[in-house]
Length: 431
Image (tube, rainbow, N blue to C red; front, top):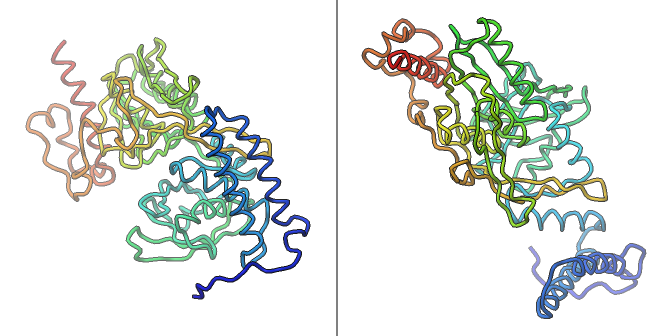
């Protein structure tokens, strides 16, 4: 590698159309407006800011004039904005016009892709969920696997956002991905055909007797309405009354805040659901429940894991703080910051962290997560279920079910059902 310094090339490079002088003038004009509009106080602050802005324009000029390859003015400015925002935290980002449209598609639940949800975790692009019946599931992609490359783009901290965009595309077009286990073993390359992915955010069914199961995959604009409708449908199967509910939030990466608040409101009669706290007045907001418990006090068990994040942590924390539900599983992800999407005049937007979430009792979710009432962290990693507690299993009817395949297929769900039956039994004893 040649580290020798060379004088800048001579000639009229700085005078050509679109050259550094034009770029610098544009930057100075835009940044001068920023300085004027900023709430700076004191002459020293203003001088410091102008000096830093001149440094930025100097760098931009050097890059365009001296960099080994031709550069694009607009791309340089966009990259400067991206760098500024991504340095703040992992969730603050610049969205160009296409990325903004994709974000809106995510919240609507309909897009062209291969049917996976991914998350940047432990310096890897991890598969969080796989859409049932989608191209990825049919090809054998599984949750907790890692995407190593999309096409020829290898996934790094600098390229994962680009890779996520590349997975999306026109239905009927092909995309190649390389996936492997988290430890890097068994890599395989798959060529998938994109489809229109309509993601149902709620799945529900009757477990047995009068116990309902409701899985919320993500929080979209219509998720609360879908959850209420699904509960009503399940209740109608047993004459209108449910004895309990398992609310499954495992692997739920979050989504629309209002959807999580509205679902919490389905089960709470009163009190705070969540508060947000930020620097500006409009970022300090409280959400409270209105009187209407759709389950009429029937017990709830919330299933969580380390993929339960953001809006799903708000829901779990609210029900836990009000003692309306038992939280069972693993400590959640701990994504407790609020991103506000602010549209820009160029058709893009910035996704900016503006506040943080706090549960009704004042707990911060950020980097802490929700700790379960019943911790299954070690239990989930083991192969065989334990023996039932003497007496309780026999009285709840679970003694006949220990060999049932539910314990093998989904042990946390098995435990959640046992808790609901135990709560119902204790309620009968107290009557």
